[in-house]
Length: 128
Image (cartoon, rainbow, N blue to C red):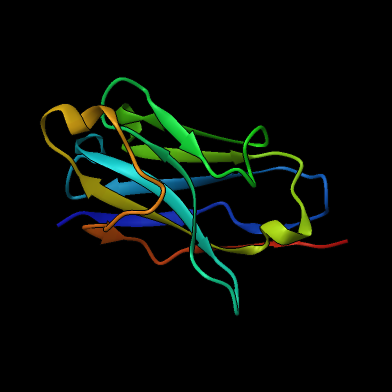
């Protein structure tokens, strides 16, 4: 079973930056497409960014495009989400989810999908 642990959240002022980490253990993270999604109180879950297993394909929600960057370091079994120019509306609990894909689907990812595994989340607060 894959265990996912998110970290890197915290309090940041508007316009600031944070880098979130999603570390996998027990299984290799590079066998899964990874999606970062967020959930704020009273709001629906929102897929923020995803990265495919192979080929380096990524995708971003329109609300974060140009500000967030997803990457993966297979040697460290980690996926990162670097967030720049944070806004108050980015405040939420951020989760990473892992989805196993096969064959040609290994080159793609989806912002809204079913996950085999999800971490417990890390809180991001954006406030002055």
